[in-house]
Amino acid sequence: MPDNETGPLGGVNLPELKVVRDGKTYSGNDACKILNTSQNLAITLDAAGIPPMKYRELASQPDKSETWPAKNPPEWYIQMDRQSLIGIYTGEFNNEAPRSTGGFFPNLDNHYLRTIVNRKYGKVLLLKAKAPLTPKTYNSNGVYKDSELRYWSVCSNQSFGNTRVNDCLFDEEIPLDKNGYFTIFVSRLKDRPRNANKECGYAWLPMADDGDGVFDEDVSIIQFRHMLARDDFSNSIQSVESQNDTKKVMKEYFPKSRYFMKNQVESFFPCITD
Image 1 (cartoon, rainbow, N blue to C red):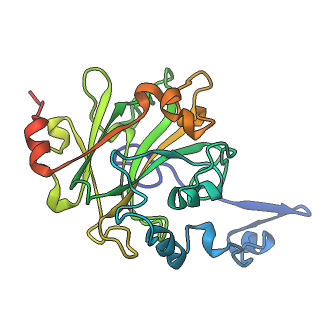
Image 2 (image 1 turned 60 degrees about the vertical axis):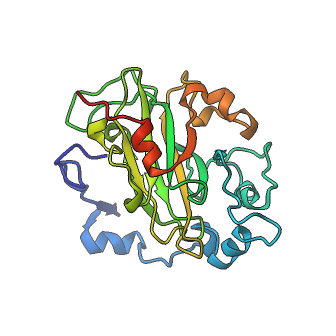
């Protein structure tokens, strides 16, 4: 993230590209021509997600419940191979598949933990876990070196059928209690509890009014991202080698999650500001 009030460029200029060929220097459009930057985009449709018709077929199987594949309480999945993603919907998730190091969200630096949410179980989803230590540099602070991750965030997405992001929160936006734990509530705007705000010590993420953006208005995807885990931080998403070991490896950093109704949140979770 760029520092606060420094704009999308983080307070620095974009790099100026120059290409030297046969002793001659090229810049601007001439440099682009030398580098052949006008080549056609080479990407398949399903590299960005599950094709919408295929997604609808997976998410509305006649022998499954109307909330499938969401579960109560939610089940969290690490990113493994592509077939394991499909396996969330078919019920044939391959627990021993190799970890993905690239494609469809993960890369060499980022790894993800995700769950499928269905508000038929409850209008508000609670997420609670211990927050990994990250550098606190958003307000131009000095670099905090004693960190466990470079960055972490949590996002609310519509579905794998369109990959649209509803909104995200990054580590420094999320309030923590005195023990370093966070509580995040996820709901539609109309179902947002009155105490689901930073002033009360809680964070909030929206669900879209049209749900997954394809056909089910009650569905959302929640994804946690861990970036650049320190080598000796053994509770990161990167440290999970098998789906079966997720809770055991992540321990208190694993998100506990539960469905509530709006009035329950307002009653059970008092505003904790001074």
